Image (tube, rainbow, N blue to C red; front, side, top):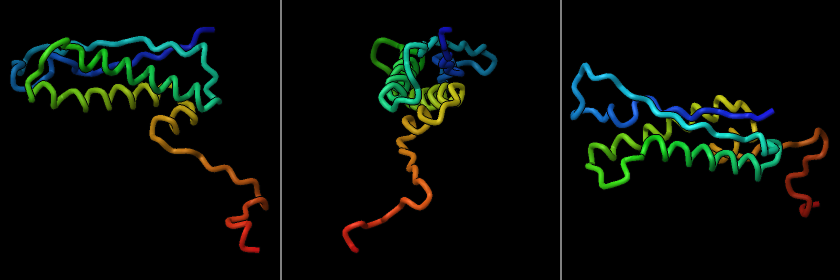
Length: 120
């Protein structure tokens, strides 16, 4: 079964603030991120999925293809962060979450932890 998530950027380009009229409808874009070929228990594959999610967020949130004003640029980072965090949440896998947030889980088997084996 093919596993996919959709990275959605709420309020992409048309919600850039001052230039858009208050009553304008906001268009959302999305990209499908496939990960059926990845073993998410493997840190390398979890990292590959994070890279795919980040690439999709760039396509959705930073897709002007040209120069942007500072006002437009200011909205790219929050859009990307929101899209990426939603996608990671939707995947709901601890290894992907750890890779995205840069956290490595430490596993200690009870009775095996020796903080400094050279001090004996």
